[in-house]
Structures are given as structure tokens and as C-alpha cells.
Image (cartoon, rainbow, N blue to C red; front, side, top):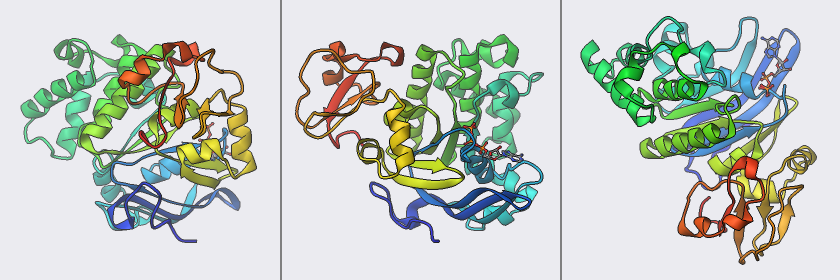
Length: 334
Ligand SMILES: Nc1ncnc2c1ncn2[C@@H]1O[C@H](COP(=O)(O)OP(=O)(O)OP(=O)(O)O)[C@@H](O)[C@H]1O
């Protein structure tokens, strides 16, 4: 099997920041991930969904060269900046890639942060490690700037804090600052908002979207939450039993899933999607009350664009737990 060479809405393989070709991961004779192939274009936002145990995290860890001991990976993983197959790279080469060409934000920042190091130093350290800042003083100043950029309050004081002195949402912002410290071409987010409460979750998603767009960072976004995929991603990969069973633009996959597993996933979610004519296609629960859908609009539980139109349709808020609803002409925000 070969990797996709061109996906809708993305560039060609030549501007792909990531090309995964026939990735397999096994433990002894047991395959855990099989025949996974995909590309991610520069600045593209791709969702990775699927039930627990379907192989999402292992795929992400393989991209970082962080597979647990005892697991074997086959196939190839290539990053734009590093033409060699990452699966064959040694630890020294991987250390140069991690945090520089590709970074990752995990679900639980407490386990990823060093508990006995001030958070400002942790941000500065990754800059010094990859020599994107020449001196310790320069890196420290850049770290405070970045903490400000991820909207941490009083960034100078926060830089001197230890992880346990921050809230869960604040720690996740620190993780994001560390992940973006060296402007990676690809940011992998593995359930980055699952442990956060709903309001903080929404702010974090906004921040990831904003900072990724600013830097043209490509995103691989792993989540159980289809509404999050609809908010964040342009394209989605659906994993089931260690394989990618479906891939396509988010709108196409959510409105017309081709694989039975995807169909079930959507039916079981409270995702709300409206087809080109404004008819509801997949809405178990979460039906907006009142108001007509204009032709060619997408109804979303959260809106990535926040145009004037979204603000004017608060009465369509069908899922208060997930924020507000809004609409856009189809295709406008893909
Ligand atoms: N270190 C390991 N050794 C053996 N099997 C493992 C190991 N890590 C994961 N697995 C198995 O590999 C499969 C895929 O796991 P993975 O963590 O990638 O799933 P996932 O889709 O990310 O699930 P979740 O959404 O719960 O995080 C599972 O069956 C899991 O039990």
C-alpha cells in the first residue's frame, strides 16, 4: 500500500509535512496497528478518531519515536524536515526531531511536565536544546513571551511557578508553549482537552487553532469528541481495530460516512451536522429549537470562525454543554 499522494484540500506529497506509509506496530506476533498510510499537508488540520484501543495513541507515539519498549514498528514515517525514515532513526537523531520538527501535547500535562522545575525554565530549556535561542537569558525572555502568548496570567510570575502551583488548564497551556517553543511544522495533540472542564476546553481549542494558524503549524488532533473534530479539523482519519477504515474531509465523512463503524460513531455522538440544503442529517439529541436553517449552512456545536452570523444565531444553541451553535455557508470554513 502506498501513502496518499494528494488529499482533498491539501497540497501534494511534496509539501506534506508528514508522510506515513504502511505503518504497522506489533507486539510479538500480535498486530496492534496495520497498514496505516496518510499524509498531512503544511498547515493542515487532521483529526484522528476511533474507539478506545483502536491504535490512535500508538500511531501518534510512533510519529514521535516514542513507542513503548517491546513494540516493533514497520513501514515508514517521513517528516518534511527529515527525509530519512524516522522508524530507522537512532536516539540521537530522534532527539533532534522531537520538539523541533514535531511536537506533542498529551492529555495529562502533570505527567509530561517536570514537577521540580519552574515552568519558565522548562519552556526555555527546549529552546536551548534545539538552539533556537542562543543564550539562557534570551531563552528565558522568549519563554515569558510565549507564556504570555498562550494567555497565562502574569507570565513573569507564572514562569517562576512550579507545575503543581498551576491549574490543569494552565498546565496544559504551559505544555502548549513547550510544544510550540521551536515552531514545529507538525503538532500532535492527543486528547489535549479531555481532562479540562468545558469552558476551559473551549478556550484551549481556540488557542491551539489560533497559534497553529499563526505559525502555519500542521495539526494531528486525536480525540474521542466528534464535535471537537468538527471544530478543529479539515480532514479526519477514522481508526478501527488498528486500521484506518475511512478518511476524508470532515464535512463529507460526518454527513455521508462510508464505513459502518464511522456511521455508528456518528450516530452515538451528539454531533450536529446539516446538509447543503439545510436538512438535518445526523442529529441524535442536540436538535436546535426554532429558526430556519438557511440554505447551504452547516450547524456546529462550536464555531471556529465566530463571524457576525454566528453571533446572531444564539437561539440555535442545541448543546449548551458544548458551547453555542452557529452556521456558515457550506465550504466557507473547511
Ligand atoms: N505497551 C503496550 N504493549 C502491548 N500492547 C499495547 C501497548 N500499548 C498499547 N497497547 C495496545 O495497543 C492497542 C492500541 O492502543 P492505543 O493506546 O493506541 O489505543 P487508542 O486508540 O489510543 O485508545 P485510547 O483512545 O483509549 O487512548 C490496544 O489494544 C492496547 O491495549
